[in-house]
Every structure is written in structure tokens, then in C-alpha cells.
Length: 145
Length: 120
Image 1: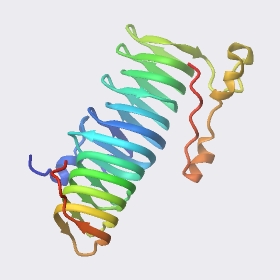
Image 2: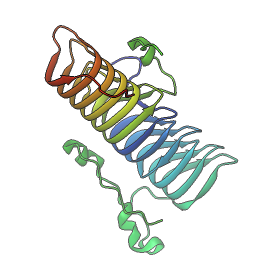
Image 3: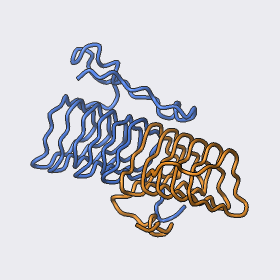
Image 4: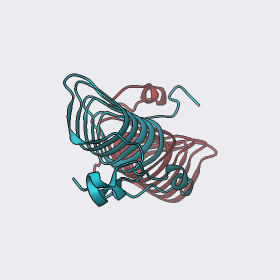
């Protein structure tokens, strides 16, 4: 391709509302209210993300609110996370503000059903590959928080 | 503010919004005073000072911009001060522009009119 590769950037000062699917690498420096499936997500220091994220790696330096399912989560010193967080590995820098429900689980299958009752169903991992073929985006889970 | 060239707007910096790759986006995007570069499937509204729809892009919806460059496929309503449809560009729908340039090979299907009120 070109020098930009397949990196998607939501610039500072811009806003997006809707759905984002099949993103590879995405950086959020603006305000996003969306449901997102991606490989790598970066929320910049001034970035605000509201909505669900399903990704392999999420680096949060800004504000996040919603349900996140990620392989690796790195909350940097300026991070502020609220909502729900499902992760495999989590790194948190000194100063990061986590005000959320945290579950060390990647899939809802592994999650203990007694922990958060029937809300576990909401957190089931969207079949990204299946839905991507149809060009559809998994519908957002209902906001329980 | 003069219209930015393609090269200027495609150099990476944090203020510009790029949506590139196999991404599928649905919704409304507001780039504010910064440019927006689209090279993906996008359904919805785009508002920004400069909007560039690149070759691989398929955009359906409404675009409002000061300057717009269409290299890819656009379907919908387009309101801008100046519009450039390049040789690879395909525009279907309603176009409102005060300054219009269409390169040889471009496809324009629909209606063209001028912007009545002074709009962004």
C-alpha cells in the first residue's frame, strides 16, 4: 500500500459516532462513540472512547468507557477506564485510573457464571470473522453499567 | 485558508483523521477543522474542512466539506466549496459545489448545482 499502511487514525478534534469493524490498527485521538473490532487499538492521551472494544491489544492513555475484551491491555499513567474489562494480560502504570469491573478472562465461556449472573451473555465474544464476511458489525451488547 | 494539496494532507499527524484499509465504518464522522482521508468502506455522514476519498474507498452518505477530492467511489449528497473528481473518481448522486473540476476519465452521475448559502 503506501506509507500509511492500514492504520486508521481518528484525529484530535474529530468525532465519530457509529460502528467500526475490521480495523487493523486504530488510533483514537478524538472523540469516538462506537463499537469497534480491531487488532490493535490505541486511545491517545486526549482521546475519548465510549463503546465496546474487541481487540487483541489495547493501549489506553485517554478515557475509555464501555465493555472491553482484549488479549492485552495496557493502561498508561494517564488512562482512565470505566465500565467492564475482560483481559488476558493487563499492565497498569502508576497513575492509571481504573474504575471498572475487571475479569481475567478472554472468552465469556471461561467466565464464571456466578460472578456476574446473566450479564455474562452480553459479554460473549462477537464472532468477528463470521460477521466480517457479511460486512456486518456485531450488535452492541446492552449497557449494563 | 488555501486548499491543501494531497501530499500535505496525507502526511501523518495526529490531527488528521485517516480511515484506511479493510475497515468498515458506519456512522457520522466530524473532522472539525482538520482534514479527513477515507480509504475504506464508509456508510454515513462526513463533515470536515477537507475530505479526501481515496481510490479504494467506497463512501455512501452525505459529505459536507470546504474542499473535497474524490479519487474513489462516492454515492450520495455532496456539498462543498470546491470539488475535484480525479480520473479514478466515481460520483453518483447530488453534488453542490461552487468550484468544480472533473478530470478526464471520471464518472459523474447525478445532478450538479451551486451552493446557495455560504456553507462550510
